[in-house]
Amino acid sequence: MDTLRAGLVRHMPDWSKPVLRRMVAACRGSRDAFRDQQMLLSGTRVQTILDIGAHIGETAVRYSSAFPESTIYSFEPFPESFQELRRRFKGNGLVKPIQLAISNKAGRRKFYVNQASGTNSLLPTVDDVGYWVTPDLVTNIATIEVAVTTIDDFCKQEIIDEIQILKMDIQGGELRALEGATEKLRQGSVSLIYTEILFVPIYEGQALFYEICNFLSGYGYTLFNMYNCCCSRKGQVKWGDAIFIR
Image 1: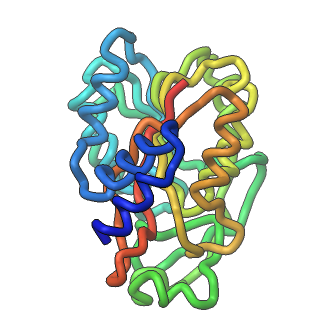
Image 2: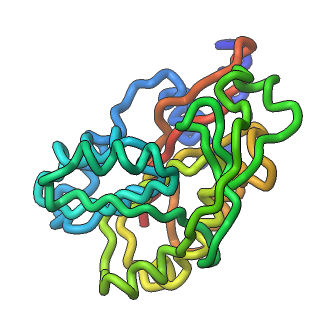
C-alpha cells in the first residue's frame, strides 16, 4: 500500500498531492474534529449550532463543552431517542431538543426504525447492506411516520440569521438536508458544516461523498478534513465525518 501511495503521489498533479496526503492522515484518525472546529471558529462568536440527527445527545454534549455559550438546536425524530435526549438536557436552556426530521421538503415522511437506533433513517437500507455493515445493526424492525422540516423553513420560523455550525448525522439524508438549506448556503450564512459522509451504498437514495462535495462547492464550500473513517477488512473506506468551510 505504501508503494502504491508513493506512486500515486509521484504521478498526481501538484495541486492534488496535499489532498491525497490529507485523506491518508484523516483515515489514520490523526485529528480531532471538535478541536478543529474550535480552531476554525476561534475568531467567531459561536451563537447557533444545528445538531441534526442528535440521537440521545452524544454530539450535543461535545458541543456544550467546546462552545459553552452557544444555543444548540438538537433535532431527533425517533420518539424513544428524543425522550432520552430531552431528559439528558432537562434544565439546560441552551440545548433545545426538537422532535423533527430534516430533509429537502417539509411534511410527513416514513421513518425506518432499525435494530440499532443510531442507524434509523428516512431512507431504507439497500438489499446487500450486510456486505458493508453488521446486519444486526441495520435490521429494520418497524416504520413510523415523522414530521419533517427544512433548515431554511426552521430558520425562518425561529428567526435564525446565522448558523455557525451545521452538524448532520442522518444516515444518508445529508444531501437532502443541504438541499433544504439553499437559501442559507447562498447567503453564506453557514460558517462551518460537520457531516457524516458515506463512500459505499448503505441506504437507498443516499448521497455519496463526492456528491456532497460537488453540491457544496457550488456554494463556495471546500473540504477541510475528514475524521473517524471506518474501513473494511480489505482497507476500503466505508464512511466517516468531514468538515467543510467557506
